[in-house]
Length: 398
View 1 (tube, rainbow, N blue to C red):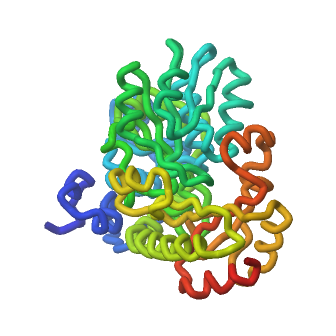
View 2 (cartoon, rainbow, N blue to C red):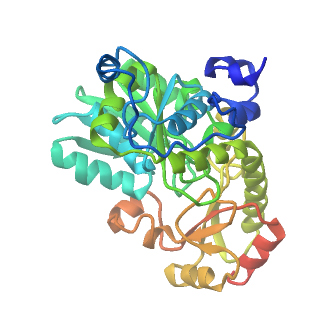
């Protein structure tokens, strides 16, 4: 079949790698080979009647690039297919995606149960902003199913988690939590940023909504900021799309185009990320200065078997705790010459950060301690450089 005439639905019988390269793009009359960037704020209608039909929703088509854009559409359709979801909406950042989910699903008096092992800004989003409008969030141990169940109240709307967690690399039992959520008629929302759909598909395990920071692995080269929400068409249309259309946390066409390119190499990159991370984690376990390594690919990881069941790889992030505290952790970071000292992750370049003083620094010491984030903890997003060079650079400070 000529792919010029192929629709998104036609790609369901193709492999992940092919979907990531070709799906979602319907060629224009210009017969372009690469996805074009539509840098336009608005669209022209053939008549006043057509304009009215577009705005009412009775006729499909573009209206205004705050909420409809052809380039963004390609990214959305492609990521929805890769995650196994019915529909995807793209946002200006991963945090904007989480904000949209909360604003679309929550109201004053509602309750949320969240893992305490999530990105620091996600914690603050629930505590400081949703909390300001009368939404209460209780934080529980990611791996304690009974704690999740005990925290659910009649007013609970959803469970929220990251797995693997940031930065402790804990693994949640997605299937068990989905069954728990649905038994209480509530939703399960999973942040899939660490695994991507290459390694894990939460919707297939029973989750209702998947969120992404496209800034990380989906881009893969640290170029752009973006986010996404994947769910059923009903959930998106009823709860998430209205917030995007009104709130305007819009993904730019250029950023969408960059992410489309990133998806084309995602499967290849994740394979090498996993291989390098496994090798680095194994090596770190043998270093005298290292107290403990947190990586689900290690047999010493408490959820290693669970990771084997629900993931097809263990990911590219390795965290480890030093025998000493913050001073030694900073000394190790400063001793590196090649690694990038930055809080971003999912890049082809290896990055290193000290979570207690960066990504999770705005949390109280008590909250960090509950999450297991000590002053001696370091997080490495393992890139695609030669693994020997990564080890050599870390050896300067170990």
